[in-house]
Every structure is written in structure tokens, then in C-alpha cells.
Amino acid sequence: MKLITLRWWLQRLVPERLGRMQKRYPGITCTQNYEELLRDPSIDAVVIATPVSTHYPIARQALEYGKHVMIEKPIADRASRRWI
Image (cartoon, rainbow, N blue to C red; front, side, top):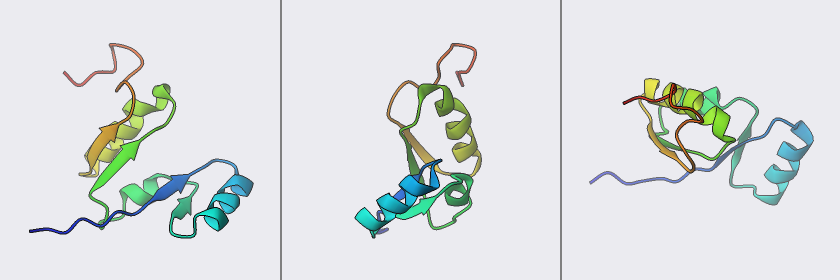
């Protein structure tokens, strides 16, 4: 049986907010580049909770890195961005 370790990563574009969140929640890892977490072989799955227009490209890239993906909202903002 494989044990699951939950790790929280937070990506923010504004460095000042990133620092505040790191102080408030010292157990999380903060980054300005989500690709850093996609390259991390110890991470098996990602949850995408970003603006809808970013869901498709981030999810596709995560899948290409072999991650399991859960998207909070619609997968894409238009039909042309679908996998099926």
C-alpha cells in the first residue's frame, strides 16, 4: 500500500504576497513558477484552482509531466480546447 503525503504549494505572481503567505502558513512551499512543482518527481498529483482561461494549458502540461490532475472549475473556456 502506498502512503500519500500531502504537500501544499502556493504560486502567486506578487512576491510580497508570496512572502506573507509563507509566514502565515510555514508548512507550505511557495514558488513563482508552477513548472517547478511539475518537475518535482515526489509530487504525484496537482489541483488546479486558477482562472478558467489557464486551466487547459496548465492541466495539459501537468499531464505531460505524468501528474494526476484535478481541476476545480471547467477544464477549458471554449470547445476548441478539449481533449475528447
